Length: 159
Image (cartoon, rainbow, N blue to C red; front, side):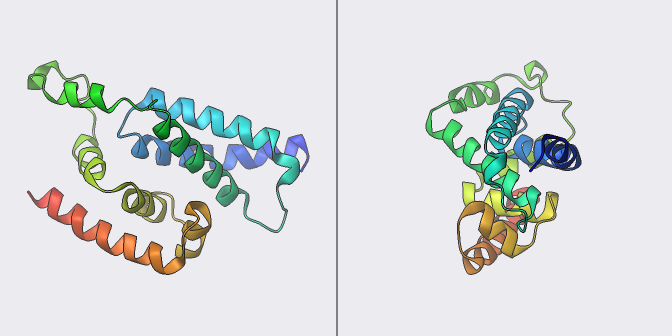
């Protein structure tokens, strides 16, 4: 893959990638941006290993998802800080005016695999087959994650 083609491909999918990561990070824009930048750098470094017959966006999302998992394992996503923010009085929260706060909170309750499947399917528009490639699971597992995730999300949001 040539540098110019890489830039064109990145430009076409970067907003979708950022939305996906923003939702995975529970609305933490700075964390999502850090992961997006790191994933794009990793993709750039590995662009000579990209197989042309594959879909570029699926390849990039897999890199981003794995980068997110690396950050999570390394403790770079600070759940303690999020928990502390939830204990603040209502008007002291910086994110109260954030338009999707309820949705991010509901998504945050879901297990990671269900949340990822929901976001990739409904927000990013990937097929079950593509999600299986991104997450490294089977298509059956993705269908189950979508079904369970929808049910749980509906229950959480109805409360």
